[in-house]
Length: 382
Image 1 (tube, rainbow, N blue to C red):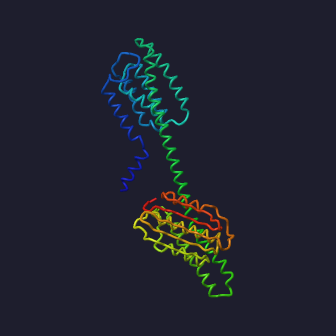
Image 2 (cartoon, helix red, strand yellow):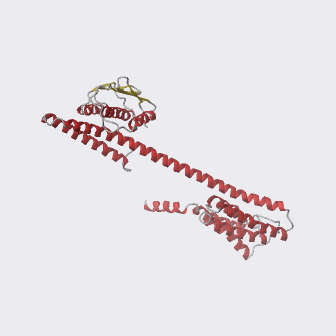
Image 3 (cartoon, rainbow, N blue to C red):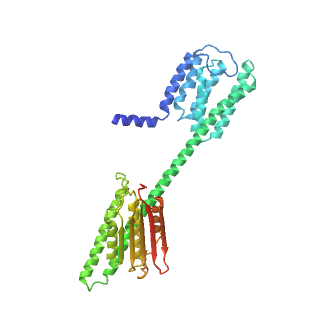
């Protein structure tokens, strides 16, 4: 297992070098075997190989092994070998290395690209003039055609580089959007957990200040604060577990009876709540149960914060393909003056319900109350 991992790591580091070392060796060997099947520029007669021919072939083929790491140096060496090859009339198969090296420059060179293109074009002119003078007088169009052919290799390399850059930018944006969405999800979870429990604890603690003359009721109020704090710690611990990379990413579906637990907690904080739950939850509801739980939780939190003591009604209906939730507060109680809302709670609920393809509304009533309604399709794993 360790050996396999090491091989994979070496393969990743070596990149395309693993492919181009064999290519350089194969092209070198083929050029030695096939003497007169290569590129012929200028019309010079083909001459037998000598010691300089082997050097020219090696200069064209072997630098391909480093074409990704040193593309300009690779091309310079290959071009030098190609010039010797054509001026001496070897016409070896190694001439194929020239467009490959130029493709590498186009696809991997990051800086001074225009300067390099101009330098390559200028360097080609003396070679074309020399071949035209010592050769049988080939028309200039031949040299222009060859220049356009190798320029195509540069163009293809540039296109590959541009495509690779677009793909990298796309991946960067996807990663950034994913991180942003994850931060937003964590913020929603923290808001739902912390705001509800802390609001309940603040209201219960405020009520306890006026119960010093009634020890039994004071003890009940302090016990409610303690129980709420424990539930907050449990929910926060679960949320932190979800942030652990070794932990599963599956959201926790509230256990049976959690709606009633929310209602009881809110009642102990001094909010009169009527609760109705109809129907039987479907066997597979996906994320619908969790979203419905968050709707009730946020709605009761807002009732505690902004309409403490007002009569509140919670209705949850389980149907075959959806869950409907309605939480109404009539606004008859006192207007609490806790910290102002940021609007994140209702916006988060609207987004949660919308992701599942449901409907969400939060409307103020003529009597000063507030009604939250949500229709949440069941069975979606989102």
